Length: 276
Image (tube, rainbow, N blue to C red; front, side, top):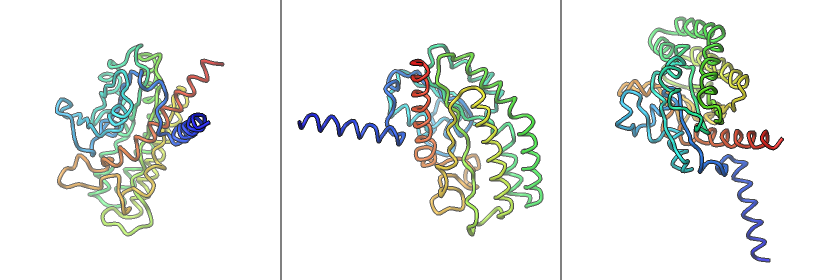
């Protein structure tokens, strides 16, 4: 009877952990995982950069590295790189994929609509220039980003036909309605609107390709710039490259749980499809 109760308890605990996205699917240990994308995927802002990653600034504290350390997949490789655009993923990163790849994560699109230029404009040139820059980026996102993402996602599927693919978005930068030094409330709200548009376009593109989308926006609520417990760097004059990027907590407490949950959902969906 005691053994039966122990088994039942273990099953309940496992079910709860799976529901919370904290338990890896059984396939994780055998996964061949490749991480693609830009600075949000490489871990800029989290520190602990790997010496052999050079200007790509791949961090041992990036969500993909943390997931691999916790789940011990059969293989793990990150080719994510700071500054990458969709064209860079196609020309420089897809070669890391193969028919043996079983799990892929990708964060891309922000640089294609000029995130860094927008933030520089907003920080230095005032509200009018900021809102104009965001409006221009939103127009570009609507017209160009869907096609750019389609080409990347088509390339991923062609290069890794057997992989589960998890697409992750970006956090909204600012907590509004607070007293906050720096960029004004109007500019902060406009920047948030631009990020929301870009993420919604990324989510729609992922759905078109049958990929799982991991939305990190809710995970960062209460931990944005202008909050009391930031998981996103504000302007950092000592190291401008980390500005507006997730901190180590942003990677471990923001991105990693969303990726874990999304990878589990992806695995479950694949198992369900194979059984039907």
